Image 1 (spheres, helix red, strand yellow):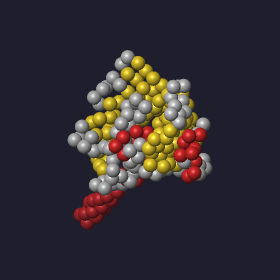
Image 2 (tube, helix red, strand yellow):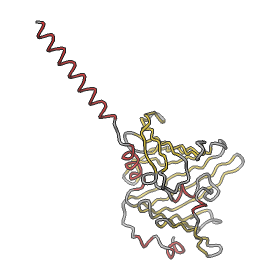
Image 3 (cartoon, helix red, strand yellow):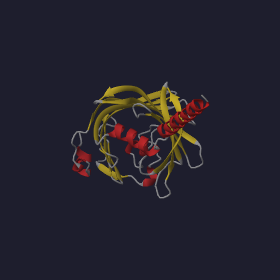
Image 4 (tube, helix red, strand yellow):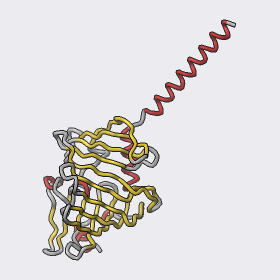
Length: 256
């Protein structure tokens, strides 16, 4: 009887050990892979979308309509289609070069790296936010620092710290990624002194373009809580063929 009891205890200890090891392996998630999955789901190999951007201030609001073409992180084209005052303005990112087409003066202007922290069209988004000069995957080191709920959804919390050789505008970024759908639910952007600058929330999760995505992005500056900029997708298509030559200076002037 004592032998049977001893064997039973040993078996129970082994089962507990296996469960413990299994639990550890399940929770050991690679943070970079999580960011890659979320980034790929957001962009696809290529994408074409229509969207609106609403700039909200305590005493006024302003709205713009956009068309956006992307091919990975290296090629981006943005065309403003409304209102009439800004209609026809366009932005091009081609690898490390960024241009702005201004129809009023019929000129394209190359944006210097120093302009990446400047406001995009008077919104709370920076030029870097819109044209993605820096890459969340390539330019940062990634560390899984916890799990939290965002609007009732389980999310990984990941710390992004810039690599030494990377030319980025943020001192660090804290990111919350939905565990089930790999969606960016929340991002907090900090400067080099560790001060919170902007908070971005991903909302209104829907199926669009054959994918489950956050269709609304809301950005709020920490020092101006009554200000915000809301980006809302109206339509999106993923993985349609787009040639690299589409993202050219000639097309920047003529894009419709």
